[in-house]
Length: 253
Ligand SMILES: [Zn+2]
Image (tube, rainbow, N blue to C red):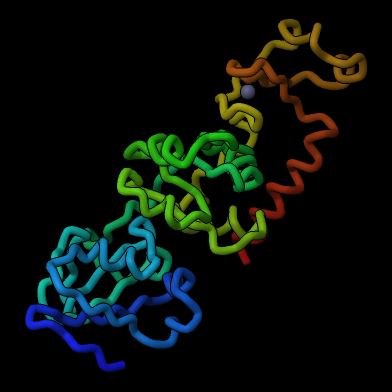
């Protein structure tokens, strides 16, 4: 396409590598994306104008040189952009933290939030929260999980991830891999309902709240100090156990 450029205009070609192509329009995936710029623009803004949120970007090379998000484009350039999973960044060069263990999950990711809690991870999940309060909940050590790429582009968001799949099992695997969580899995340590850390409870302290058969057959109990829910390895744990096994198995294949 021929575009009449003004005197100060310049051309930047963006190559998005690996898993970042997920964010591009289908017709843009095979070619570099060409931007005709007329004024100095931060490389972060230019990348996001192509549809790729900054928390997904781990390495930006401008004419072969690694640059930070604040780098300003002022002249013709070729920009290579890499995601986290397949990042070729050298140690110290990557723009993203690898091992974030605390999360905020968007309202449409309820199953993912529950799975993360089941595996012991700290997840704030408030389905009715507005976009701005979700973004504001992301402190420096809490990553935002959402499939809303506009929300991920919010400037407050430091860490975040957009699950590529819509399937809950694929989503939990993606998050474990992206944030390097496999070695930190600690099932049954967190309340699935309210995210509280479970504490061991004496049977005598919770006995009034138990069903007659539970009183007879079970000895080990945990209680959530947040909402009071009691957990024990009874028959309802079968489904949770199967879920954990499924995730663990999928991680090793
Ligand atoms: Zn609870």
